[in-house]
Length: 501
Image (cartoon, rainbow, N blue to C red):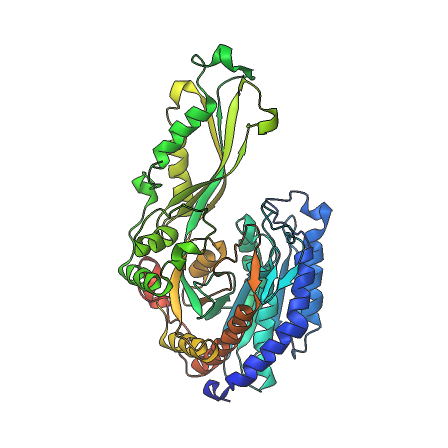
């Protein structure tokens, strides 16, 4: 069967029923499990929540009627587990060609601010939204991946061999994943298409594909000035405040008036095609670029120009302070000049900037010549390189556009994302000939990592159907010999400077 003969109405109906009858109930149970990523639950093995999530997904996958499918939980010594699923090709026409589908099952921590009737581990369905931590980021990935393949098989539509990888430490920087990819290299083979369901969407009305991801450098930054706390009336004016010194040092990195990162070594040139895409995104989304965030009354975004805001979010470095220690609660804060202040830094990096280099630059700037001889340390926890997509093959561009028109009745859109998926950079290096479809369901107000996170169920259904269509088109392109090595010609230096997705 040719990909063009796949009936989109049948795909849509099958996937809608699968989501309603099977996937949503599974996600409800998954949300109940507080399987925080290892960075946020150092006793994850003892606590057992990660294992609960693995068992839920493994059990569901094994119950699916997919001929020849092999499901395995791979466990390397001292590492988080990984679910590995292999589905054979429906025929020998595609040879060793392969589609790799990726997701993760670990979650961000609880965060405060949830509505009274909601909570991170309390699944609640309101209308077409499923609230709770992890459903959209990224628990639905394994369910959507297998449902997309089942939708094709229901019609007898052919597909190449498919590999599904579900890791368990993405929210901690995917530090275990390279070991698993190396361990499973022979079984994975050389995928010509990578599908990642861990990204965002600008709205719920179109299929969105991610063209770039920022990198990240971050860790715990501490300024210490005393051996112990002292009376603030006695010491202030003589002993420098650790908070003030910390503030001085952060001003080396960030302009506190504008938020611009001042260190030129943390910037990178923005490719011309990404500038064009940012302008198009700004035109389509309008003020949704910023009003999707829960601004307080009277608050304004960091710039008025919408294109500049899109570029700020996707290609420019930006610093956030995501935690602090050494500051007592207000209810018990006495008149004490504190001995030290610590903050957790999260520095987003341009997609093409080497993450380790970014971490070194950050460390050098913060630690050199501390004011008044203060004791300054930076414990880097993350240094992840971002990702910029290779040139898109004509077959994939056509498939994505067709999927968006069929299931959304609107053209596909392409944009960079501000977050980091370490897996993408690693896969780009290991498989330079692969094409990428990076998409997801994290749209306006879905608030991944924050309070009131939700999965937009209709978006999940349509994204799943779109993946099915692209996998079908991949088979047709593979038979025509159009999938192998398409992006390899771009090479290392040029790769990512053209095309999208």
